[in-house]
Image 1: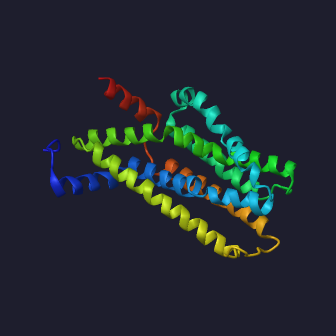
Image 2 (image 1 turned 30 degrees about the horizontal axis):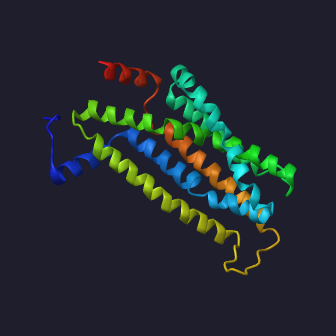
Length: 244
């Protein structure tokens, strides 16, 4: 009986199987890992941009507030957008915008002065569009994935599925720290309290940050576009089921 409740290790392996055979859940989890690892866990690179490129760490807070302006805008608009186009379409479009913005930003001339700082913040705004939309929508997406699992198996495994999803988000934080370390090694970061960085290090760390954010957007875009399979039609069907 697919609706039979399983306990103990059987419940664990059942939830594990349900998680990895749920295409939508896998797609949403890959996108979440990319978001957490390459956006939320790499802000240290932004601090280094202000330290070594702009040489003005006092503006870091202002820059971060400005770069997250898209989240404020989409918080007001997202409900209407998702109702019209569906959560998947909105996220995929915005993640693509973020990925393209990251690649374009690599070629935008940014000077190490106040004007350049404003250009840098605008670039980050473009990069953060997709991540902002995804962060606002992600838990609703996970809820849809769990509802799909229930309809498929008849089992109430929401607690285990949420736990597995949260585990991968926690794992992503470690991945993000590793990416920062590997990236800094690749561009020649010199460790030590009195270490002196190369003259071009500031520009390299700026480009590294753009590349990391663009990679996060690209991975999330590909995962949500080609793995995640709950479109607007399926969302409407799930909503009707929940209402009933």
